[in-house]
Length: 358
Image (tube, rainbow, N blue to C red; front, side, top):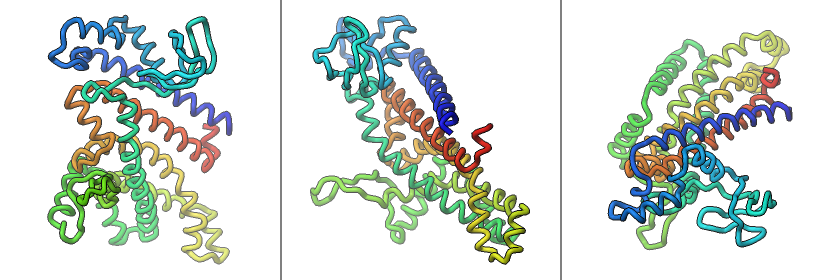
């Protein structure tokens, strides 16, 4: 099992290296002067040149790529001799020095540095650390809703095959998979937060944290999670329902299920104890793939509902040409997705030992 985990981790590292390379090359060839964006339109030539030198924009592309990787890695080499023998604490790096690799070169464990926002001048990592927990909570609730509802609906569809319930669920699944996230967000906001606002009590717009009208500061408003989470979970719900239905039907046709029935076990006991567990493998595999889609869909859903997560950060960064924020957001999400895929592969290996051999 350890060999399987190490192999999956190595694949994840290679994927991340490819993602880092694509992000760096993509934003390196985009039009626009980063120094001008950082200083503003009223900056003078000398100030712009100083900023270019500080940001390393005067260096060849290959050296800038190496420096970029060195900045974002938690374990990296630094050629400048720090003031402290044990700690790094500067405008860019905060970490612990592990050893000296040379007279003026140290190996340090530090926080990844993704640059500073052109607009707010804040570190990108600080901006993302504030926004990502809100997006993560939204994605977790959405996938939890999709898994629970999808497993129940898929199992019932298989048990009541070819009934009105099965056909209605299949039609709903097809509609759910075909519905774009941004359109679903607008539709749900209009129906449940505008037309039926008096019944549901939901808001068309609102973030996870809301400012109190009585001057008590911010408080967590969980009802603002309902519509974004349901909207984000519609497509994975449709997929989980379809997969679970087909998987349950396949398991029900196996010989050991007929043997369990022949032993006198009740039908629902067979479903609970034997069918559901063995039908979960394709669902677990699909969940990892849908997490990537949910992160992409969250950009539109958060923007429509004005939910202050990573999606809003990305859209604002694109609107204002704030490239460090956009680069950092893409890299941040990519790391999370790679880690999730590795974890899901390991879980799948536990559920299906044949996956480790494959």
